[in-house]
Each structure stands twice: as structure tokens, then as C-alpha cells.
Image (tube, rainbow, N blue to C red; front, side, top):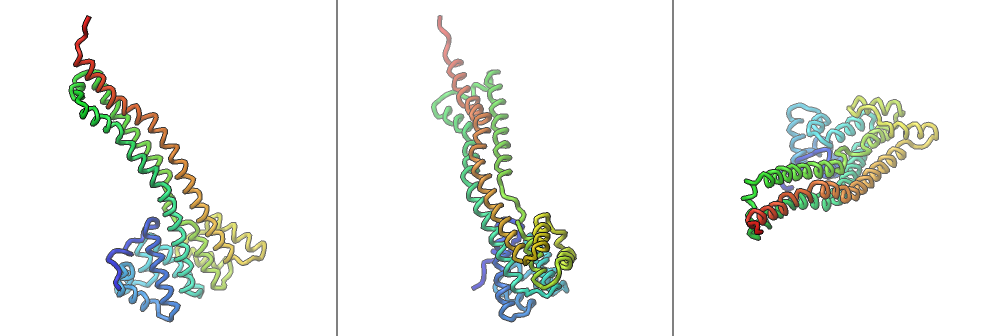
Length: 300
């Protein structure tokens, strides 16, 4: 069965791209473990309808190395290319390395999905509440109040300007709160996974770090460096410690994301009380009062 075009064609660092990369890497690892050569494995994936694999094959046909072709896809594929280069350099099992990286990507994507689900309700509430002042205006028109006539009144104009300003302020404030609660687009723990791949080839820690840096992975993060120091001082296997630290970091990111989503619901009450409700009064209630006052002559 051929995959739907474009289904695995995007590889952003976050979002659905991480899951798509993980799926392709798993399939690639299975083919490599079955004894299929790397170039041929990419061909099989391209023939099955994988858009990213087809792009890799096209780049390889133009003379690019497989790792460079993979890195050219961007997003999470850059980490896959680094792992590919590291595994080939140190002689680590390529299929096992790609499978481990795919598991890390999938776990990170699951964490992002959990946070996105938790954020969906408060974010939707914020968008719904933002329309509240306009609903008040529509309700006043349905009730027959001459809301439009109040625009000619200086007080009505002042209410209109202030209400619109408060609506804009509420929208920007709520959007900023929702944006701050969004999960980090980076994928936690991938640097530790790549160093673990390098060490699984049997090289020293110093050599592993050198290989990772030469492959484009850069220097280790402070967390990864601390794990390596612990491994050296305690004589414990660094590979297992690194993978455990990476899994712990992804768990922490998931927990922090859920906490941010829980706090978002209460924080959205601030723009509601400070901006949205006053805008509701200025744009909905005040014009109705002005309409009544201007339409009713005063009697002595």
C-alpha cells in the first residue's frame, strides 16, 4: 500500500514532524536489520511512497552522501543525520542506533501531544471569551436599541474607542499567555541519545564527544556533561546513564507542560476581568443605556 502523498513529507523539530521522522527511522531500521544496504533501504522507502525518502534518494542521485541528504531535510532529520554520521564513524550498529533515536523522537512527540491536548481547552476558552463584547453589541441590536446612533454622541464615541482598545489588549494578552504555555519546539534529550550512540561503538568518552562534535552535534549540554562525569567517577556504564537521563528529561518536559496548561486556565482570568468584561460593558451595555437616555425626553 502506498502512503498518502505528503504524509511524511514534513520534518519540523516539533509538531507532527517528529512523529513522521520516527516512523520513517523505524522502518529504515527494520530494513537495515534485515540486511538491506542503506542506499537500497532508502530506495525501498521511496518506492513505498515516503516523500522524505524520495528526497533523500534524489539528493543521493545528485552525488550527495546519505547523511548529508538526510540533514538537508531539516528539522528532526538533522539529528538523525548526526546520529547516522556518528554511528558510521565509531562503528556502532546503525539499525539499533536509528531505532533508539526513533524511540526518543516518538516519546518526545507523545509529550508534546499531551501538552497540546491539555492546552486545547483553555486556549479555546480564551478565543471564545474574546468575542464576548461583540456578542453584547449584536444582542443590543437584536433587542432594538439604536446602538448606531450613539456613535454621534461624544460619550458613545469614547465608549467605542475604549472598548475596542480593551478588546485588542485582551486579545494580545491572552495570546501571549497561551504562547508562553506552549511546549518548547526543541526535542529534549536528543544530545544525550547521540552521545550514547557514539559510546555504544566502544570508544572512549573523549573520543565520543569529539565524534559527535565533528558530526555536527556540538558540545554536550550541561546535563549530558554531568552524566558523563558521574559515569567516570562511579565506573558505571555511560550509555545506560545517558539514555536514562534523556528519558527523565523528556518526562520532566511533559510534566512541566501539563503544569503550564493547568496554570493557564487561571491566568486567563486576568485579561477576562481587566479587559474583556469592561469592554463588554463599554461596547454592549453603555450604548444601550445611551440609546435609552437619548430616545427618552426628560419630563418635569
